[in-house]
Image (cartoon, rainbow, N blue to C red; front, side, top):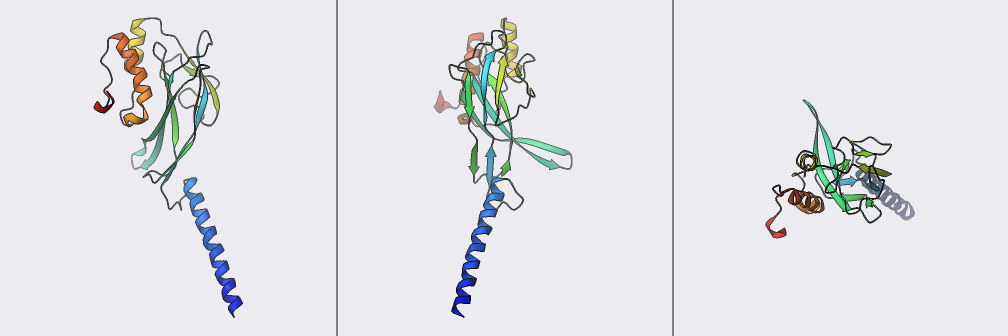
Length: 204
């Protein structure tokens, strides 16, 4: 009798552990049975080069913006849920690692869009001559090494248009998660005599 009770307890413990494991797994994959709020942010890595000379572009701001889509009566509605950023190194290369955000309201997988800005260059993906080589221009694949080509802008008019209409600062993202991007934009705005993007007082 005692052996049967122990055996039942062992089975119950093993079953409980398996249940918890699969529930957590469901969380990480954005499954229906996900009990914990967890958001997966895809990685982006690659190289940024001059579209004409093919030389690497160092210190370009690379901002990854992550979206979630929600089905509504009027159709699908997308909204920003998180962001990550970095700068390219002397070789023009960058790496934004994948991350798991725990205890957030929006769980599961998110779609990522990458924006690249460097003063005096056309912003990716909005400038018509900026491109992700061999990939979809506006939504290049995450988790894959991609070469991005940015065109050098020749006139003041081109640069003003680029920074005003192309380099959207994504005001819905907190300043802490896009400070490198805003710094690059303000560097260009300052050189062109334009009004700077606003930043928190404590960061001035």
